[in-house]
Image 1: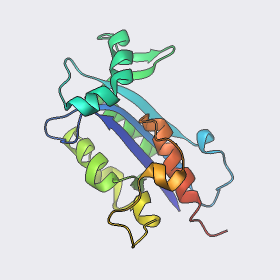
Image 2 (image 1 turned 45 degrees about the vertical axis):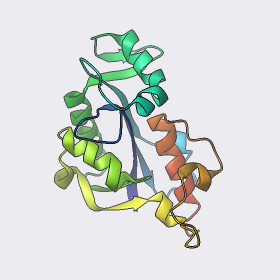
Image 3 (image 1 turned 180 degrees about the vertical axis):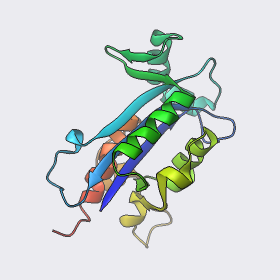
Image 4 (image 1 turned 30 degrees about the vertical axis):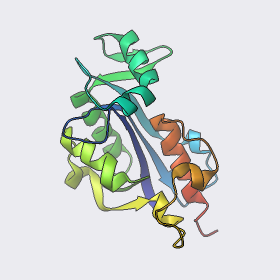
Length: 183
């Protein structure tokens, strides 16, 4: 099975009032689990806006992204030491093109991907019906401990620090899910 590990960094929790700052999508093929995760095909970019609005905690947590975007200014493209920076519409189009190039309508995976990442993308113009399977994989649900009140965090599953870098976290989801593959 092929799936896409998707992660976003945003300015807050509400897709109607907050903004996407970073998108990363990493394609995994469960038939090839020996490929290094960081060698898998991926689309990663920062998302620039004319002005930023959001929630204090998220703005603080993602201050490093705002710093990079501030250095890029109002320019778009590929910047040494920064990476790709696009306005939101171009970022969504780039993600959709990447998904088309890598198998089309794939299952999206992540940590709360259905409840968080997908609503942000849809609000930004992402055509979920065309580019994403209606089923999703939530890493927390795969490793649930029914004796606890909530599913585990990505950090609890992996034993690693979650960096809040969309690419790092999308890769971490794959590393965690690989533990559940039958060999």
